[in-house]
Length: 247
Length: 247
Image (cartoon, rainbow over all chains, first blue to last red; front, top):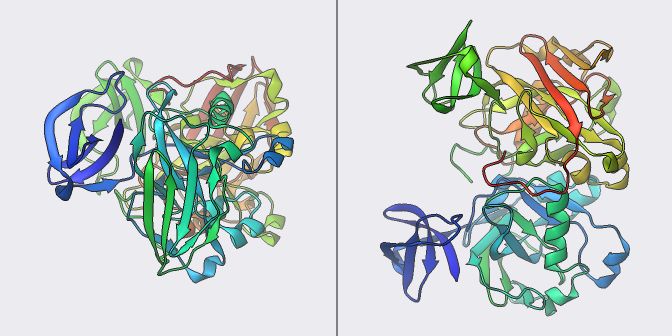
């Protein structure tokens, strides 16, 4: 089952993705997903980031098998850096080199269990990462965590293809079976020490190469069995304050 | 004005602190605080963490004047690590050395402006900090961010005493005028790159010494003009998952 969060004339809701529209549901975090008697046509809906997490946590090095030699390590991204499909990733020139990273992301349910999976783009400032050993500036800028297009509740995560394209440039094919630690291992380790709850998101690491992004480009991150997350890259507006209600 | 978040027989609300009770307010983030016609006696209320932030950000080194020689640096703490006055800080033996740090914390309002100030205890695992260069484990454990007892909206932050006591041991007297960067500078710098919103919290750095904490002890962090934040330290229950609705 695919569950999206949509903005539509009647408001903002979670909904099951159907062939030509969305069937609203009562509560994403209920023990059973209850479909409501309300349906929104695809043309009347805009996809949002599938959840509004309080915590977004990522794996610091979980790429090739060699990373198993290192102890697992996690970083946090600010919850308000999450954006949805189609929303712009602002990249200002003073950030230096900025990379996109395609990852499978775990969405947590009511009691810290796995609700499902979505696609994440873990946008990272490479120059900032060198200058700031804590990575807060490198990974925490506005718009640096695109998530979407929806949550897939049924997925065998052991070996799924993770893709990344920037305009016409595609990163070499990669799969979650290339991760140093599996999705299940990552979830177990992170849940072991970090307080997590409904709607929180775990970025499980990029099995493939990252690619540089610049304003004017379009970045596509994908996970086979889930879908494709597409975001334009725009001239940055860093330094401005977030308005009330902004993600 | 002091604004608390309280649990009372009628629910959970923000309220203005009065001599012998709490006057409920309509909306903490409204442009003007509107007092409601509902009052709760002090005996019927329990203080909670004054806000439920989506982002908690701290300053990495903002103690003595020497830190001005370093570029400013920030870290994130998970939103769900926030606990309120009187709630236990779990410290398990396998975390090694754990320190309390008393800090003035900034609470943000509707449009990223400063709503007021509260007291924070930035609990930090020192051994974990050595092992994990990203500090996620060191600062991100359950219960590692006590906040409270309330928000003080009127405070001149330039030179206020910040105190820390663990049982009968008090850290030497310290003041915000000893911070490398002032509260105003910290707010301006962090807001410049991090997406922040209503209820988010900035820990501004500990001007005084930190103190080790162990299960069975009581830790008191205070800021003159705001109040005192007291938490018991208990045997850790790390490794358990957070239940739905837990902070």
